[in-house]
Every structure is written in structure tokens, then in C-alpha cells.
Image 1 (cartoon, rainbow, N blue to C red):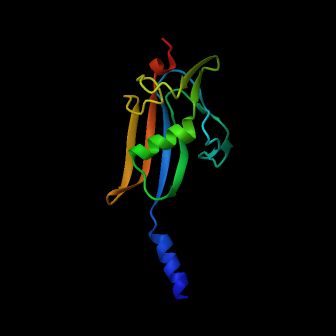
Image 2 (cartoon, helix red, strand yellow):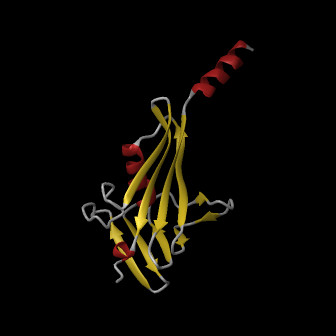
Image 3 (spheres, rainbow, N blue to C red):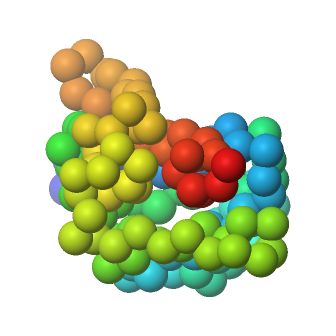
Length: 150
């Protein structure tokens, strides 16, 4: 009995974290986000699964809850996780069902690239429990410049 109580206390004390990647479509175009990372299935708000694509209507945000686990998170961790497990080697935006704009992992300098986490198009947010972040999100703001439409 004592061992069971001790085990429950140890598990209960382990911090846990969640990470979300948010696409904020500030453009006037409907887009479909296509990613090629390792994380190809996640639950959406209706509990359904999508595999590699997600529609993002003009003027709306979608949240991709892509990483969770024991421990804590921080900006550096969510950036590494987003690059390795979500974005992968390339991401594309299908614009209004006709044009496709593709970004590659090697493009980490352009302010328009989802691979440049220092871009003005990114916002980072975290929730703290004391000095530890138990939740973090990266929001990529998509505008007409990112979609390369004029």
C-alpha cells in the first residue's frame, strides 16, 4: 500500500507540457496548409484526425496541438519540435485551391518563411507554473506577402 501511494505521488509531481502550433490566416485568401514532418496525425477540435493537410479559411486561426509530454517547455524546445516534428523538410500553402507556395527547411533567413522562428510573422506565448512553462504556442501570422500574392 505504501509503495502504491509513493508511486502515485511521484507521478502526480511530474510536470507535463503541451505545445500548439497556430496558423493565423490574416490574408484575404483561403489556404490549405500542407506539412511534411513526422507528426502527421493530430486531433482537431471535433476529435477527428487529419493527415498532412489542414484548411485555414481567410481571417481565421487554426490550432494544431502537436506535442505533449512529461517535463516542461520553452521557446527553444517548441521551435525544435515544430521544425522536426511538424514542419519537416517543407511546407506548402495552397492558395484559393489554385496556386501553391512552398517553403523549405533550408530557408531559415527569409522573414516570410515558417522556418525562420525569429521572423516578425511569429508570436510566442507560454503559460507558467511558477518558473516553468507547462504550455507554449507558436503562432505563424500568414498575410498576402507570405502567400506571395498581390
